[in-house]
Image (cartoon, rainbow, N blue to C red; front, top):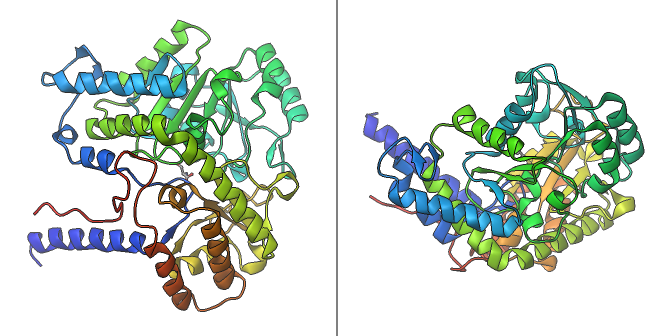
Length: 429
Ligand code: DSN
């Protein structure tokens, strides 16, 4: 095999990957597809350049157009999220989290967080960013019935331990966080209130979820490629306690945790924000309608969907306990054989030291909504999941039905150039 053969092989594998996703039902709650305009910008020369610092205060020449793109992207984010405090430079959600942690805390400080098994992101764990900063994480009590933080117990905890940072937000985000209900305790403790909105940014921007900056959060961090259907990147939004807090955050972004900030994905983010200003509300509305319908249908078919007493979900995400069907790993792997792509997930009552053998699966409706699926397709998807997970039909046979359904939904919606096939491989040579 020559080096060229290896290069061609990588390209072939990438093409096969595109085909796989073109023939699959994508239900991972943290993914999405780009609009054609955003995708085009990924291939621009911007992806080969450097820009350190802020517009007008750079360390490299050649940033004349970059500065204008960054200013426009920042202005679009300010408009979409209704705040004057925006930093569009983080290159991922975890990178944004690193900046917030480094800006607002010192080693030894206490941070309160959602438990991992109840949906928190790994960066909030002892073995993640929070631990690497030397912080001491203490978990909020979590109520499985309401699938949310227990307000009374959490208020007592916050008053007792007075965390330097109170972190909210989840990677399994079924319901809005009770920020308003916790605000008295948070003010008494004088904590920085930080909301990791990675999963729900597109729903917040679409005005279909809570509005953390107006409910007491001082800072929101997030990735920009989940319900916000942009490039893989991060963002920080603020309603800071004071200017000093925001300056600390911006200094933590650069030179703290990044140097260059990947200018092609920044431009793609700008386009995504403009498109979300135009289409975000109808998209977010349909994402949540689809999640509710899919959850209800799975429940009707006999699955144990979490949050039954509170309507299953108010977001893009559904959690299903599939212990009786063989467990999260087995069910996720069987579904993958049928081209239904989702992930196994810990449930609040699972042992969080055993993440590779959880009871649950997590399902997200944002990408299937983005390609035009509505409630009737959610009913079909629930039926296909049942065939594999409950009826134990041969996944390879179910795959043919999956491909047939997917063939009807091969164009991106909720953007300026609809119907582009996001799974098409674009050849340059
Ligand atoms: N952990 C990823 C997820 O929710 O899938 C996000 O970083």
